Length: 411
Ligand SMILES: Nc1nc2c(c(=O)[nH]1)N[C@H]1C(S)=C(S)[C@@H](COP(=O)(O)OP(=O)(O)OC[C@H]3O[C@@H](n4cnc5c(N)ncnc54)[C@H](O)[C@@H]3O)O[C@H]1N2
Ligand code: MOO
Ligand SMILES: [Mg+2]
Image (tube, rainbow, N blue to C red; front, side, top):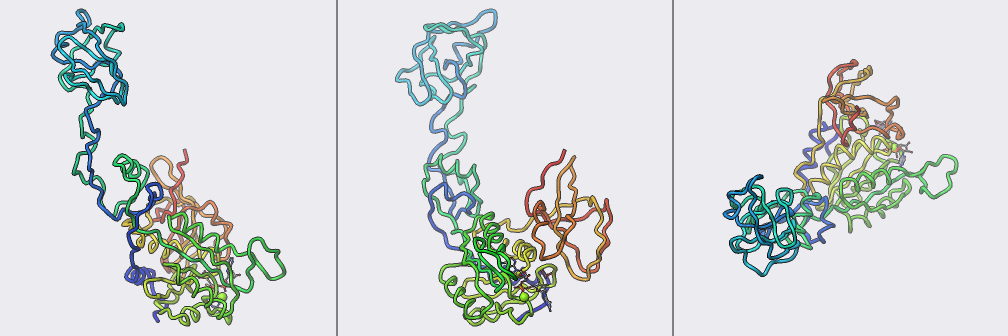
């Protein structure tokens, strides 16, 4: 088993072992946040007819050529066309039709004059401005044409894509299945959050933090609850999860303690260890194994270590599994608002809050950094990566931060 490997090596191994999920059909709205598993080719022209982009009068450009403020042209109003209705008449010389935005242009008309350039009665309209043929007409197919590849396989479905699919009448769409991620927290000291705390016990927060991280990136969490530090108990939970999950995440029990049995349990259920321990802080003792197409992540029990290793390793794997091409966290250059004096002899991720002001990013740190401290992760949105042996970092110095979320704009 590989051990004490670099961050890059760990990610390379994971990306190599990772398999994409299969394409499935889902109802349109459920496709939000998924990746398209098919090209979308328009089978219609949009708009499907020449339509009016204004409320006004449909006329013949030829009839209003000489119109001006001083000498308006008067036309006979022969019909009224609200959106969704079609005139059964053909527009002839000297005629106009009152037309509403979104309505189909009647036969014979080649221009729409907006109300503001007219004066009208029920029977007549005076036009005060000339317009060229085809002015103020949304042409058939100007948005999408039959045969256009409007979206490509591999594209992330966001709100506009849902709208385009709706326009094309697709009530179901083919996407890569969202990965199913089972979460197990191990530890004799853990109790469920509804239970009473007794001496020596703490509540299981990791399962909830991780389920929230899973949900946030659009995958499906399954809470396996807690189990004690017994090898049989861990194996039983893992076996149950293997029949359902694409990924299993455990927390706790991966270091060198007498009760740290997760690696052993991975192997005893038939998984092959890929690596144990990565040269990073926090989260050093991360253990990863594979079982067929599935990956098993044994994350450190320390809450901040589990959170940060999830973002570094699980997040990209889950995103890639569901077909996302952009699975890496965004990095930006930021200015330190306060110094960071600690020199680390290990590669370290430091939780940070980065915000945006007047075209620049600025970064601040909370006062607590320990991998067992969860509270100071709240309000942070980024990680400052400090390579081993570098520092101290001074106030005003430019650094690179990884963004876990969009920074707030501070005026
Ligand atoms: N002799 C050594 N001891 C330790 C080393 C080492 O190198 N030599 N490494 C330390 C480091 S670094 C870490 S990180 C931890 C990792 O420990 P484990 O992954 O084995 O996790 P546990 O021992 O089970 O728990 C650690 C800590 O986290 C709390 N915890 C566990 N599960 C949860 C949960 N679901 N919700 C909230 N908190 C949880 C647990 O109570 C412990 O306090 O090992 C060091 N030791
Ligand atoms: O690797 Mo551990 O999470 O730093 O305490
Ligand atoms: Mg331990």
